[in-house]
Length: 359
Figure 1 (spheres, rainbow, N blue to C red):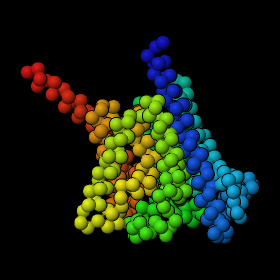
Figure 2: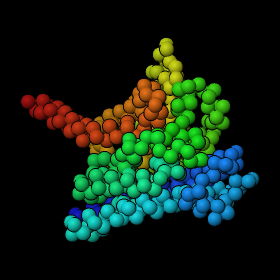
Figure 3: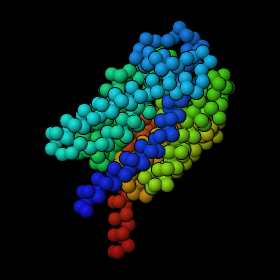
Figure 4: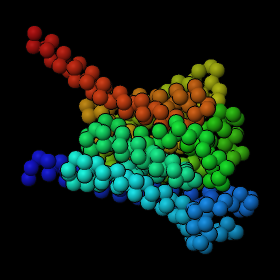
């Protein structure tokens, strides 16, 4: 077997396991999306909108009057599947053009990219924004670097970042956007900024609901339980580096604790580390974006440094900028850009140390 065939086979194995790890996250996304959507309509039926996803939910028989599990699944699928299918079509379209131009076989790496991008968007994201974000993800996040396994940044992360920057206050009238802070995700952190833990209680957010994902947020980022199941599979298959994952949690815990201990802690500075972990998209991003084996540091010291940097940046941005409460996308984007530099510095330092030992 040639080295090229072996590498391609390894990439296919990684993609299959990534998709399997995203299965519990996708199930949680569908259930919670349907639950949140029907809960808003039950409280205010006048907020129903006449768009494709709402009509599809109604066509599937999803009722907001005493909804049950089927209603949640039907309404969730009515929002999740059209978004995912559109992302797959756009990704496949650009991949086919790239394959034709470069005279090579069509790569399937766009499939996990489409799923990741969909899971990081709210269930009401306009279809035009999905086309926009997925196009950037494939063309600038993947194709421009040569294809699968050659990028230094997660294409899905880049696609969502472009959408977040370009449309910061999109679709605020849709029922699913209740409890959201635009594309930044849940407004729970913004609530903590304004009123502390008491404000979370007023919104019906407690530790258990945040753990299982029964709160508003972008589709796949609300359930720490589902993310944990996916992380366990990726770690057992050695797809992601445990040092990089652990370093992110350490960075988040250390910096959050330092802010908590400061004498003038208020707003997000007073937020305990466990709320930083449970609220927003940090856990999802830490597992599925920052630990992308093709877009993270490859040296052991580099993984510790990059991971700590991500966790620290998330807390710093959350504390310093209440207008961008989640902070995960910009923090991980900055850390991803610095990954090659971190690895270069680590390797250069090792070479220098070895040279000194042999003088």
